[in-house]
Length: 256
Image 1 (cartoon, rainbow, N blue to C red):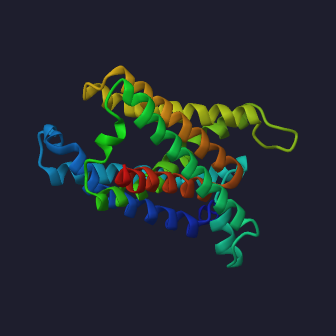
Image 2 (spheres, rainbow, N blue to C red; image 1 turned 90 degrees about the vertical axis):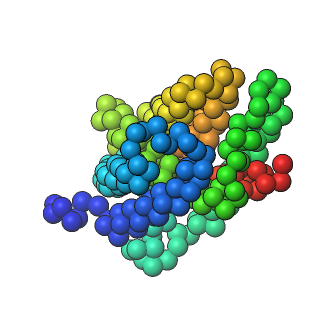
């Protein structure tokens, strides 16, 4: 097999461009939320941003290739984009998948928002109050970073890699990953993502209740988006994450 035939390069470059644009869109929000702390790196802001952008670009290049290449072997992938590039038509189940993704995105955002504002707020300041500090236009743009970049890196790359490892160890009679292997990957990715937030929380002296809330919220979202990626494809996970982010950062964050 020739290298150019290993993955669908149309899908590859489309996802890469989406990830790069989403990364750029997140910069205003990230700079505002970080504040003066970004200067703790000891170098100028342009150098910090250029370094982080370069690192993220390399990660995107690897993540998307891994997702497409290993996805072929594990039954994971991008059914919507595959159909568009191969047949120029949307999949027959596109409408139902879109509605399900939007519904779950709204559901998760409402659950997280209610828990944060009415349960965890009994013990400490709600996390969403801090996240709503930047202006609404920055929060709107950042939602696309969450929807595209998080799903490409966490689900398409990391989850696919873990599912592939489980598939190499044990597979079904149809040659697919076992349900146990997929669920293990979903949970591990959610846990790792939560740990990433916790590392920054510790450095900012965040209290234990906030840390627990972060782990819980990431688990709820990660399990939901991971299941969607497994059952409906990457596009479904992106739609759900984007919907959830817009609900939390823009709609609910502006209304309450």
